Amino acid sequence: MDWQGWATFGFVATAVLTGILVTAQLAGHTRMDLPTMLGTMVTPSLDRARLPGIVIHAVMGQVFALFYGSAFALLGRSGPVLGASFGLVHGLIALTVLIPALPAIHPRMASERSGPELNVLEPPALFAQNYGRSTVIVTLVAHVAYGAILGLMHP
Image (tube, rainbow, N blue to C red; front, top):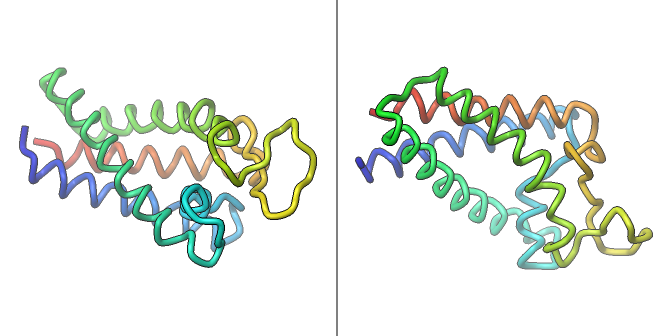
């Protein structure tokens, strides 16, 4: 496996995915702020959460890029369509398993069962619907782009 290529392409794909999510949030298409969600796992300060959240997301992007690269190697092929397909599955898993599971492990996120509390983040719900109807589309587009980039750049 080309470790330098994996690290470079994982960084590029993660940057694009994060850029799509942040741009969609700034444009009002979603209220999901992934860097803040992740960063508040390690700091209670909303003002200081974005930087650690970006670092956590970058590391997670590299880990997932390793999985994608391993899958491409096992299949003996890659490409933007295959990568986009992986990205679609990845996005669906994120929306149905990973993001909805955050309240169970996040020290500052309310759950669907808890009442309103001060200084906690809103729970995402299935398909992150508590962050807006467009959140599903934005998340899937971002993950499809992530996978397509990895598939395109993987040898």
